[in-house]
Amino acid sequence: MELRRLRLLAELEHRGTIAAVAEALSFSPSSVSVQLAELEREAGSVILQRVGRGVQLTAAGRLLAQHAREALSADEAVRAEMAATAERPGGRLRIAVVQTAALALVPPVLAGLARSAPELRVEVVGRETEAALDELRARGLDLVVGIDYEPVPTSRHRDVHRTDLLQEDVLVAVPARTRPRLGVPIDVRTLESAAWAASRPGSGHSAAVEYVCARHGGFAPDIRHRTDDSLILRALVSSGHAVTLLPALIGTATPQVAVRPVEGTPLVRTIFSATREALRGSPGVEAVRAALHQAAQVVTQDRTDVRAL
Image (tube, rainbow, N blue to C red):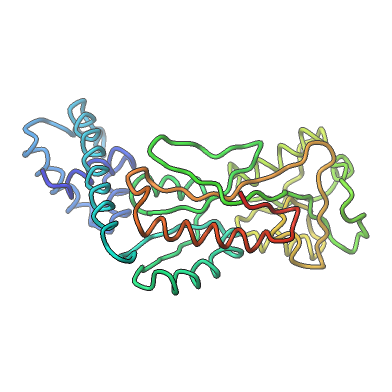
């Protein structure tokens, strides 16, 4: 059985519909259907059954999908071992980075790799953490630089290897013109009547805002503004239209925003890198991870609100 067809089956199990598989892999739905029909012929068993206008895997299909994942991982591990015999990292590496980490880490990482691994083609896209990890496990990405808020941890998976890069304080951000007492912990209860800004519902940032207000303030925040763009969150605060939570790396970057720790238990978040277990140790992944750790050391130098790990 061809790995190409086995991957389509694994993608179908993961994504649920032929249309989603086609979109993820840049195929037409009809070509995906044809290849899956050929895989079914090769397997000698019915692996798909019609359900309404869609399809679902049969018991035989789920068994074959499990073997497909194992075969794909084995193929990837072999390729990684073979790549390790080269003198310098090369090939293509697809990386997803959450915005705040990208602003601080991506420029020095790319500059360092241009010197240490010039034959490595690094492609960077912006993604929120959970979506990026999902795409990583589906082999649409090779490395993820994500974030993990302490009270609302990111999902962990056995087939994903994670390495923590740095930890930063998460602070309450208020307009600087309110003359806040800088550095002094803020009683969140004083912000009960304020307009809040947060990322989309269900995101780590939104959950952190809701947690802080409920745990330390005893109220549900009035979230009037929603965006996954941290620069827009910061602009809403600097313009006086909202308060929010901002990580130290971005929250301390403008004089129009004042940041203060939460009174009570300090709030932190971790920036980490993640790759599939099968890619762990591959030259390209290791080169990027080394550059990330070097960048983390530089951006945290002489700071107490951001710490390299």
